[in-house]
Image (tube, rainbow, N blue to C red):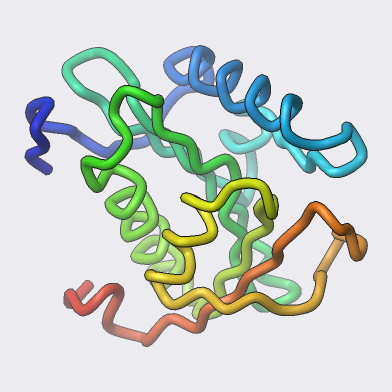
Length: 165
């Protein structure tokens, strides 16, 4: 994908390739919410069984990341750790990362996407709303939490964001 920063490639990432982004993301979330409201998973967990970790790379530098966890037994996939470096925000990288994990979920045969984000992240809430995610009740391991916004969307079998998969 071409951005005003140059060509960004989205691909599977190794934990060490996104370590800086993980640290930035964790620091941001820790500054916004109490520890019990942060449901963080590590890059290693997202590189394990039933999960994938993707990175957005500008040359050799990671500028964004996202994880997807396969909860096939419960009929859904969950988006985890979407984060774009502050300087690279606003270039469509988060939208492109979301499109990639949605396409992957469809490949896995999972058409229900879920995610949890925080209420103090208006940019994230706006992105998810724009992409068709609707706020719903808590699911899985999440408890009702005044700091959480839980969203869902149903993917079409052969489309994501208006493009054929």
